[in-house]
Structure formats: structure tokens, C-alpha cells
Amino acid sequence: MRIISWNCDRAFNAKCDRFIGFSEEVRNADIYVIQECGNPISYNNLGKSIFACNYIWIENKNGRNGLGVFAKPGISLSLLHWSNPTKSLFVPVQVNNNLVLLAVWTHLPYSESFRDYYGANCEKFNDNMVIIGDFNSNTFYSDGKPNTIFESIVRTLEKKGFYSAYHYQTREQHCQETVATHYTKRSGKVRPVHIDHCFISKNIVENNEIYYKVLGENDKQRDYWLDTCQSDHIPLLLNIH
Image (cartoon, rainbow, N blue to C red; front, side, top):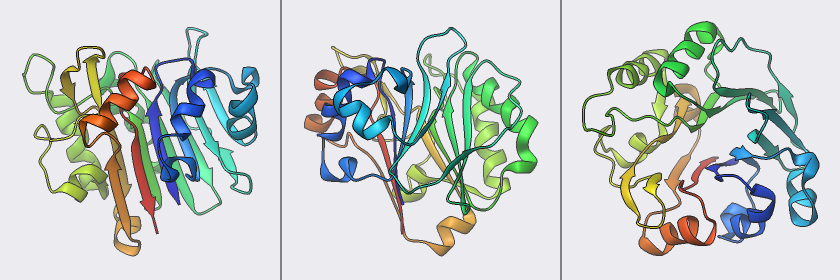
């Protein structure tokens, strides 16, 4: 199972050819989690043929864009009806009856939103689960001060048996990531931060081969997403074998 998550920064239908054109591993993913994308009903051409056939899409509360989970034909997606006491978008999906995928796109207040969502649904977080998306959070604020709420989220998920895929793969510490997932000013490529995350349950990690990376490991890749695809986020890739 290959899962890719990306905040497309709107206009996904117009960008999807560049998105899947990045590499064969992107083009051949099984599931795509796309934040800030429009309603797939409106897609045409390539977007319609690839992304508007097998999906679950939840609209943003402002009536524009939303959070979508798109899958290849033959993969079963079933929306799970979990409580959401926040204004953020969370899409819990049962995949093929053997994996729970929680797609994430938090809105202000970012860390508090995930904390409150987890608090309302913690008993549903199980040992065959992947949490992935745009958390808009790290263990520090943009002014360099500690983000104690997100630190608490990381500790809580660890106690629940979830690994951060990036930190598990790289052995780097939170707040010391060497690869960014977001650039605050796209054209200037300044203020790189790591605010998109993937957490995997211990059972999946221990019983499968896991490969994870951020698709912006060098300047050429980074520029492709920021300039060619016109997004301020870099996609995440997770392989589960």
C-alpha cells in the first residue's frame, strides 16, 4: 500500500497532471490524501479520470475546497462517522476492511484542534491505523517558542502506540527535522518548517516493511512543488509492504 499526502494549495484539478508527473512512485500510489482540493464532481480531463472515480471528499466549512481521500479502482473506501468537535477537517476511512486511515487538515487553532479531535475519538484509534496529513503544527511555534500542546500530542500518540514515520525513518528528533514540508513564502523559499506528519500504529510498523519520505529532499524536488505545482507544501510518501 502506497499512500501520498499533499496540501495542493487549491486548484487541484488544474495541477493534478503536474502532481502525478513528478515521479512513477507518485503516479502509481494506491491512495492520495489531498488537502485544500475542490469538489471532485467539478474535475475534468485527467483529474476526472484518475481522481473522481473512487473517493471520499469532505467540504471545508467555508464552502470552498476540502479534504479528499482518493483511491485506485478496486480499493474499498468507507467513511467512518466519528465525532468532530472542531472546525478542522478529519476524514476517518476504513480501507479494504484491514486499515483505518485518518486524513488530517487542521485549521486554527491547529494543535488544539487535533488534541480535541483525539479526545473525542481516542478509543477508536486502533493498532491498524495510519494518521496522515497537514497538521499545521510542530513542537515549536514560528517564533521559536515551544508548542507544548503539539508536544503533548506526540507523547500521547506514542503512549497509544503510534510512531511518527519521519522520525522513525530518520532517527531525527522533533523540532530538529532536516527536511521541511512547508515554506511560508513560496517564492522566497524562506521559513522552512516541518508541519505535515504521518503517524503509524506500532502493529503496522512491527509487521510490515515501512518506507517513508518527504518528496522534497533536494532543491530540484522542492522547486518542483513550490514553483511548478504552485503549492507551499511538499508531499509525504508512505509505503507499507
